[in-house]
Length: 522
Image 1 (cartoon, one colour):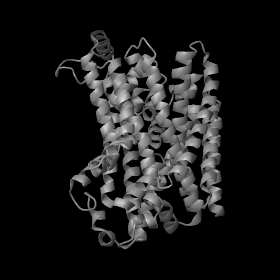
Image 2 (cartoon, rainbow, N blue to C red):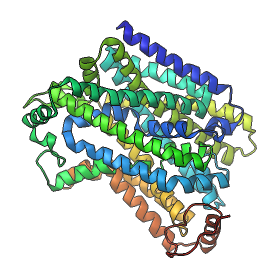
Image 3 (cartoon, rainbow, N blue to C red):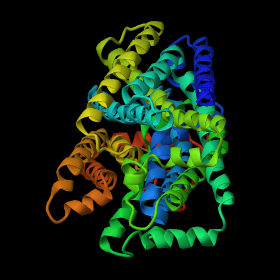
Image 4 (spheres, rainbow, N blue to C red):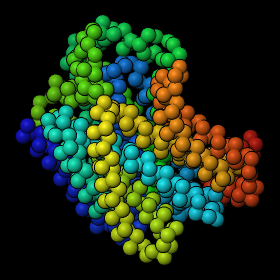
């Protein structure tokens, strides 16, 4: 036990030190919210992917691998596709436009893109973002408590509070830069631990044939990419739901703010390969850990959630204890905390920056001095953290059967459905309008809640919406509503202005350009 605590203490010490070093560079709002736009590609890519993965990867996806077997690899396929589209297609244009607009937040970009004459878009965006961010952060704090229970036999509430205190401390001190630096460190720890565990466990076992045969004996569905029961309408919806989780990378503010903060668009071209490789290695390893854990710790007829905890989310701790000596177990405790805290820190800074910069400084008190805004942002960060802690504790008491996988996915889906369709249309369709953007956000926000609490409860079809989860229907609804509203209420002047702005960029034109039309590069 001493080895575990020593490793955790060292880990917390590194985080606090990085937060203190970052705090010395905070002089204004730009420094606090986007690190002065000075991030290199390694830090930006690791920070973006560590933020996007979270405890959902180490505890949720590993558990899903143990529950369903090979079909969980569809999650990896979906994430790789989502990250590829985000970094290869969307990021270059988004970066050049946000630099052109001098945006500090994703909401700044939207307001500039649509030449907003009112504050409606800014207010709706900020409120929607903070609503789902609170849910997302609370899910991470909930995972912190669960991690301390699994690894150290702590009381759940003690673990949640300890994790909350550490991450709040370095976020309040160092802002975005602290979050980015610690994300780089934590992402490295997380990736190393994820890749190392299945490799060591695999080579300690007899052979791949024995593993395949053993899994087949436990449940033939574990070795089928269609899942239990083979091809069916239900399995199709399950696979679709897992594969489309990657949609959340296509414009979620917590990921795309890293593109605003990166030093130049040249750094994006380098960072895209880092992000892609990180996503593939981390996702593939996480699912593999769950599958190997199912082979090692269960047998035919045994329920995995009975042996490996609710949602099989204890499979990682069990695998670590089985494979490594105690001092290495401490490293894995740090890895789980790294996954959680990298996401919490990023979301806290982003939400606090949105409330301070997008709402208070731009709507309520436009005369607020830059230095005062940075100080206020620290206070808002603390308030947001406390609210998220309260929500996490409340959910833990009201829903003891919750799983980390789906708790996190609800917050992830809400942010994605509210923002991603709108970001995609704003980047690649010059006819998209502010009215369409607002309609898209409202539709995505509303459908996330409707899908979760109404559609999934319907007789006959509810089970298919449960399998599909909230992301696909909400995302599709937001995309269609934004497109239809923009067609019904077009703005030719905005379209001409956006086309003119694209002429000054060094990236391809939007998707409605006639093929073969030359691009002017200035």
